[in-house]
Structure formats: C-alpha cells, structure tokens
Length: 86
Length: 260
Image 1 (cartoon, rainbow over the protein chains, first blue to last red):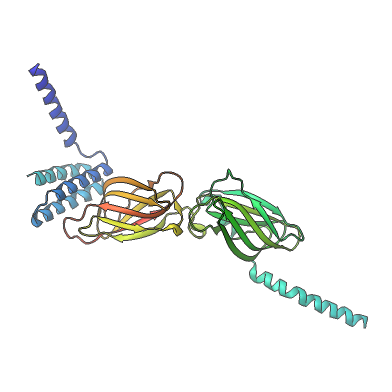
Image 2 (image 1 turned 120 degrees about the vertical axis):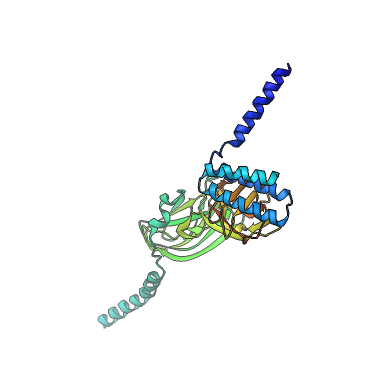
C-alpha cells in the first residue's frame, strides 16, 4: 500500500515538474505566465533594489514572449521563479 | 403688342424658374453614392420601405417592420426622378421622435449621405418623410444595423479614449459615453510602456456590467486581440481597467480603447 502511494506521489511530482519545466505553449501563454510572475513579485513587497532587479528580468522575459522566443523565455521563467522564491 | 406680351411672359417665367433652378444646383448633394451604400464596407443595407412620390403629397409615413433589427444609420435614395427631401421625422420604439432637417435635392439614382441615428442603437418604429416633388419619382429608405461612426468609416475600429496608467493606483477608467455609438468588440493598445492588465469591467449604457478577466502583459506598442462583448452591438458608458502597478519607474504607459 505504502509503495503504491509513494509511486503515485513520485509520478505526480515528476509530471508536475515536467509540465512546469516545459516552455510556454504559445506567445499568449508566455505573456500570461509573465503576468503571474509579476503578480507574485508584487505581492512579496521586496525592497526597491530587488524589485528593480526582478522588473528587469520580467521585462527581458516579456520581450522574449512578445518575440515568440519561447525556449529563451523558459530559462528566464526559471530564473525569475528562483529570484522570487529565494 | 402680342409679341411684347409674349416676351414679358417668357421673362416672367424665367424669373420664376431661375431661383428654383439655382437653388437646386446649390443644394444638389454630390457624393459618391457607392462609397456610402456599398455593402462590402461592412454590414448591409436593409430596405425599410419606399414612397411613390405623388404630385401633391408632401409628407408620408413609412412604418418599419417590427421584426427588423435596430438601425444605427438610415439612408435615403431617389429613383426615376429628382425629389427634395425637406426633413425626416424618425419615431423610435420608445416614442421618442428625432427630427432631421435635410433640405437637399436628391437626383434620380443618387442618395443622401447616410444619417447616423444619435445615441444608442434604437428600434425604429416609423419614419415620416417630408418632401417636395418635381415630378414622378420614388424615394427608397434603407437602414443599416450596427453601422456606427461618421461617414464611410463604419465597421472600422474607432478610438474611444485613452488613459495614462498610474504608478500605484492599479485602476483607471476610460469614459466612452452614449454618443460614441454601439460596439460589438473592443481592444486595447498600449504605448509608452507595457501594461500588465488583469481585468476589464465594461459598463454598458444601460448600466449592466461585464467583467472580462485578461491576466496578460501587453507589450509597449502592442494591442490586445479583439475582445467580443456579449450580446449584439451595445453602447458603452465606461471601461474600467485593473492592472498591476509598475514595480519600477520605467515611464507611464498610455492605454487606448478602441471599439468595433
């Protein structure tokens, strides 16, 4: 029984990670993701220095989204997530 | 003596006719009818009814089929002969009457520039045409549903207003007003900086509101896709924008609202 739960949990973890690790499916999805990250950053009430840094990263991401550079956007998303979460 | 009388009669007749002729030349509406009544310009003209001009009748009422859609524009065309359209009195479903003074002679085969019905799209009940005949002719009345905006630009995007987004507020309102007409879709364009738009609240002329969740970034110089409004063409009172305030000072974005 415990083994089954562990297997399900492991599968879910891997699947979720895989889904979030994938590049955005489209330009619109990319811009939506950028919006969510900006929203998350705004809710964290960082100091001005960090806000400015994140804003710069978001701007870079949004530029890639707008240019349909979805693969490039993926690495930016990861970096921003790390910055916000860290 | 006879000759003198004849000449005097001819001169008198000329003086009687000339002012009318001069007035007719002055008032003849010259325009490219095709540019106004071309159905390819979006929407189509529906025939409301026609009047067969009689020598003495100077006003006639055309009742609009109650099954017809609400019209935003009305057109008048003349066939088989010239006719002076003095005025049109349009009675709407709510019994309001709109008097449109025209005072123009319409040549056979041409028409008046379409008349925009003021305010929101309203259901027409009847149109009284006051005219002066010059001989046998027909007057045809046509209506276009959903055409808006002045002149031949109907069916095109029309800028309704702009707002400079604030640094901290996260909310702005673009007032439209009933005079702008009725719309079936809107879109936003952004310049000066990007806009992180969360949602839109469209408040219609009748007070009803519609919330549209957007949650996207509109890059500088870009615009949203057309956002369809529920129902048919609707008058907009104002649009409220909710957005994420800028984290840093990269300049204020100006957002403009357009309607179709």
